[in-house]
Image: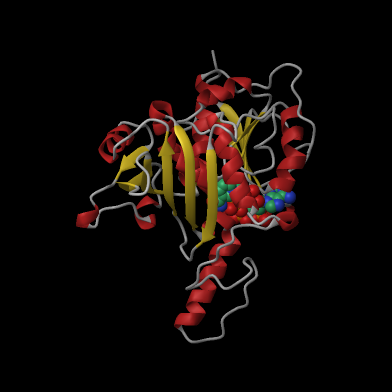
Amino acid sequence: MPPDAYRVGVVGATGAVGSTMLEVLAERGFPASEVVPFASERSAGKKVAFGEGELECRPLATETIRGLDLVLSSAGGTVSAEWAPKLVDAGAVVVDNTSFWRMHDDVPLVVAEVNPEALEQHRGIVANPNCSAMQMLVALAPLHRTVGLERIVVSTYQPVSGTGRRAMQELEGQAHALLHESEVPAPEVYPHRIAFNILPQVETFKGGDDYTTEERKMMAETRKILGATEEELGISATCVRVPVLKGESESVNVQTREPLSPEECRQLLAAASGVVVVDAPAEGVYPLATEAAGRDEVLVGRIRRDPSHERCLNMWIVGDNLRKGAATNAVQVAELLHERGLVRVPEGAGIAAG
Ligand SMILES: NC(=O)c1ccc[n+]([C@@H]2O[C@H](COP(=O)([O-])OP(=O)(O)OC[C@H]3O[C@@H](n4cnc5c(N)ncnc54)[C@H](OP(=O)(O)O)[C@@H]3O)[C@@H](O)[C@H]2O)c1
């Protein structure tokens, strides 16, 4: 029998994702006997909202991490590289939101609606996928299960909250200055001005690669989650930053193995968990970032035949990057671990520090 309640840590509790994780844990009534928020030394003692009350942040240290059963972590890759193995050694199962552990062989990469069975293999760390891959797969996995996917071509329209709190402040500050004809603050988070602009760069061009790290993650993680090799599933991603605060939009062209009409696709998606079909374009009804923000479901619309290929469909997929793209999935994973009696570090487990 799984225990009734756990001591739950939230690492990165003052951040865009961490504060949303606290919100979602409280909203969904996750069985926690205590919730302990962690942030950097700078925030020690700072109060964060949890349910009706407030909790005080602690720094990560050998003494402060003792006795935790489960940790939802979202404080960047460097922190996760160092602290996830220490948390596991101290007895906690870690659901990690950063990219650091996602492609590690011993770490399941799980979208709650897509591959929950992968959790059975965890050795202390479970990774939460990249927000762009996550929302796309909630919508595409039902197609993959029914008619098979052969190739995906995706362009993302990613909001600034995907880069965290400072990026949201950067967009607001620049937009305010432009609207008030005052001097526009120089970009600090992004390489160019983001207000009233569009940047065909999300993250970095590492080692001279002509794809960004975000595009590489989206392609690699999609295959890992679907258990597909490069030969089995073609995928090409272009990731773009847009001046939107919350809610990521994606234009997706998908080639299926078996034929699938737009109407059959709508029916499949209408029956799928975590998806809402919003598709009456002639009436101006299609998924919008403003509609998806604050919701846990992924919205799908503009489903139509690609006139250039009989087994290709186009669609528009929108989700809240901070909720389903990060916090909600992490909490769903925690719920699944609880339901399956998997909130325990397996005997002899241990993942080498990064
Ligand atoms: N934003 C998204 O849509 C999204 C989606 C999926 C995954 N992620 C990933 O989640 C992670 C966090 O993203 P975010 O957008 O929430 O960033 P953010 O708003 O900048 O927040 C970063 C958090 O990490 C904490 N932190 C920094 N250094 C720390 C340390 N040494 N020890 C403990 N806590 C520390 C910060 O605490 P202080 O306030 O004390 O500095 C803050 O709470 C990143 O790895 C990101 O790639 C983000």
